[in-house]
Amino acid sequence: MSKVKIACLVSGGGTNLGALIKAQQEGILTSGEIKLVISSKADAYALTRAENAGIKTAVAVKKELGSQEAFEAEIKKLLKENEIDLIILAGFMTILSADFTKDYPDRIINVHPALIPSFCGKGAYGLKVHEMALEYGVKVTGATVHFVNEIPDGGKIIMQKAVDIKDNDTAETLQKRVMEEAEWKILPLAAEKVSAEIIKNK
Ligand code: GAR
Image (cartoon, rainbow, N blue to C red):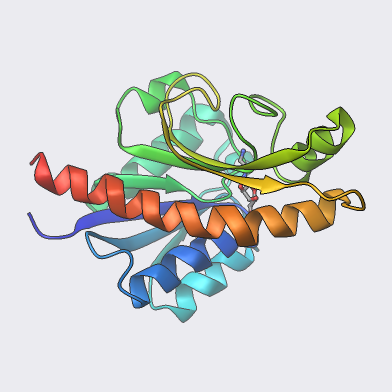
């Protein structure tokens, strides 16, 4: 099999997408290639990052499509048209239904900005996750890359990396450090690991 065809689903700034693109350019991600970026927001900066890297983009906005079913049907259509093998949720802020995830067993991975099973599940996303960690008072947090199944943040863990919390951290400083020290490192490594396994098992 040639390279695994990857689609990244995004909603915002796309720094994790940026880390994947960089990994591809630097030869860290070699078993897979990002073929498509789908954004749930028309103005996501992640789309500009993809365009700058010459990657095909598409937009699927739930509100415009009318329902979760129509939103997921549109994403599935785009994935099929582009013969995608692996889906990476890179800052994708919508929970996918069981109806969607059941069609892609071990073929969807997500990066979450905490050490699962802490500070995860429905309602735990973006900056909120770091606010939760600071509020609880944990001294160590981090990031997790995991397979996506019907349980939000409940799929098998692929990789984790810990990050120490400092006394003077705010949610913003912590988010930045977790991204730099953990997310941007383990997401490309996990993408390579899963892509290589898909090729091996073909
Ligand atoms: C990242 O911290 C990612 O882990 C988190 O949102 C941020 C997106 O940033 N995702 C979640 O919270 C999903 N539950 P990015 O758009 O710059 O990659």
